[in-house]
Length: 430
Image (cartoon, rainbow, N blue to C red; front, top):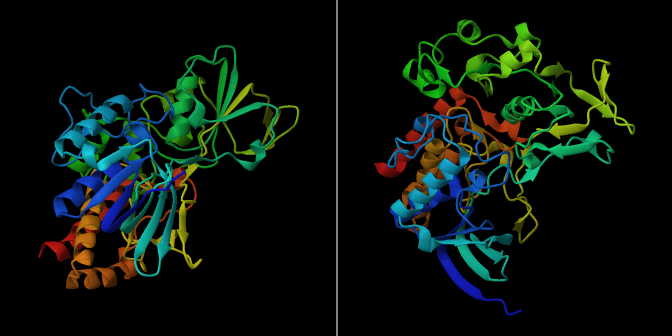
């Protein structure tokens, strides 16, 4: 097949058309930086249009805490929109910023190779090859579902939560494995129909309701910092325990961090479901035997009919390569969770989850990335200063390590990250 070759020496390629990629596109367009967006999917929306979980599952962040500053979510949306509603919101965002002509859907990146002269050679899935000056990786953190090693070759049916569509599981004994948000969502859904539901948890987290004092939880935390954000950790824990409940009192593992630093679980019913026995709590899984029996680390056992593993994801960055074989970047220590410290031509967006809303942070990161590329392409002195700022360890943001649950950034760190991003922008705005 003939491979088309395009020259795009002063152009940025954005990989992914989810919230992160769309934020990058809008920011690059506003900054006057040439760009293109590609995505394997047939429509924009990223995780909101993927077949993960189920369409009517409400988000755990309120619409007010997860919207672009220049485009509020429709007043007709509920406080916690569904994935389908958020996908519609992102389509409207594309229209607002006239991005449709710059987005190619159904086409992904097969390989992106970095050369020493600050350019990328990119091979697309349709065989086209292009040369770009910069790369924005906005593929998200949910590309590759992770299963525990004990699940390999199991005769008992084992699936990842990515495969569960919210279907009823009558007359089934179901074990949900995981300690994060996805595990809580799946367990509460399964408990509506399954004969018996158990939740295997390796660690404990605080459980907070969707509403606090009549407001969405994330809005209450922001509007009333005396309630959650600024109180000392001990008092903060007591406030949440009094308002909603203490996980330890219903038999769940003790939270490993104070509530303001925890990757909290947002659920109105989980604690009640555990307390009433609709969901049983089990220890971490030690092994799954050939006869289908699960052995837990506390010595107990059980024989479920189905095991659903909400055990996280990994980012799939296997398409990135370096022409000389050198390491592209230390992905565990990105500045502001976005910029490699030793590369000017590579940016990562949306590689972690945030308690309290991802879109406002993505927008800040995207703006900073657009300013950076504009300064770089124009040989502005600001590009050199920004390079020095990125190498300062004080600007370390969330790193891309482990699985998605471990990348869910607590509310306090989210606030600190937003402050750092705002401060960094002043370099380009002065």
